[in-house]
Image (cartoon, rainbow, N blue to C red; front, side):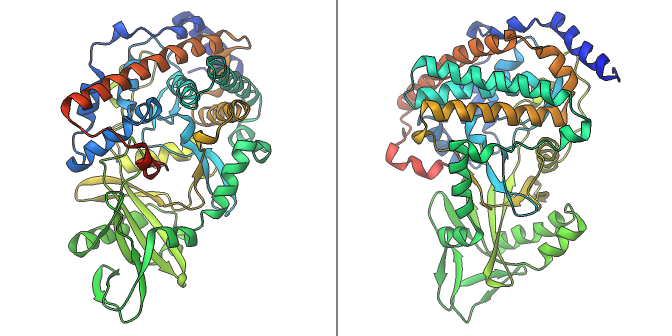
Length: 467
């Protein structure tokens, strides 16, 4: 691998011979040899059977809902295309709703990419193409003009390229610490940060739990006992939230012992001061529906010091079957714990991560552990204006470029992209064509569901699936 900055830059420029930038415009559905619905069905193996129908229902809600849930389909489609073979850590599920706010280690609010279930090392442009397509699909879903849809994608790509060029000129450690200081002045992001300010553990306590009188079962240090005073336990809001008691609750709590070993020592000390109170099973997102997701309600210095941990099952990422076949990329490391994979990818791409990020194993399945709803918030697409979308698209470009620069060869990517708009224009064309493909695949899904007699979503019930 070239070592000097100029060698890395030249290496990126040489990659244009493997794949000219204009070739990124290509998308042809005739390349497919796999049926997208069969790919989705294969991805459902191992999930909770009774929740599979719910995932299809959420995907059928809109083309954007389909896009969110269909990572296995797009991963396959991207693998059919040529690539220059420049690697970075992929978010894997790059789309407009997978950026959001959360609390950093010092308690201050951070806005960044915040979903890494599909993270893996792979061709950098796979993330770029998915984010660009998501902007078109989301804008169409908000009934914007086609010119606005394309412009949002163009703005994102220009910002990605110019940010990568700027980061390539910085000293390495300055690049790694690079902060986007203008976020609060961006109207859409400012609104998200204000929502996140209110999303405190106390707010989650009121939202997800209820008071129970004497006699309610309570999980505490792995044992079930009778409470003598009124206490709070998780609400039961099927199918989204269901209390877990008895032996299963004890297993969930016991898995925190293994999780604690994945934390830094000082953070382990903090965790030890919290005791488990109750456990629930929670349905989250769209792509993750059907995977096992437990929440543990804990208390530290009394009832006014709640902590909610999410123990989220992680499956093999949708890109895993394909990245090892990409010419020019280094061989993938041996298989790692899926929860650890997510933690490593998140830490690689984010400047600041959840201080309680870790992993565990439960009944032979691999889980990510993190805080639940700790000042978390994301964009509401229903309220988006064309002007707001353009501002937000710039932020998407800047943050994705930073994540790739931190985790890949910043100089090589910058060398490949160059200073012209060739790459930008090509990916806009791809994004528009792939948005058309997404709409066609969504129609195929809804037609299949109708033919199969499966339930199509009632829009009055869609609020439950938003993060």
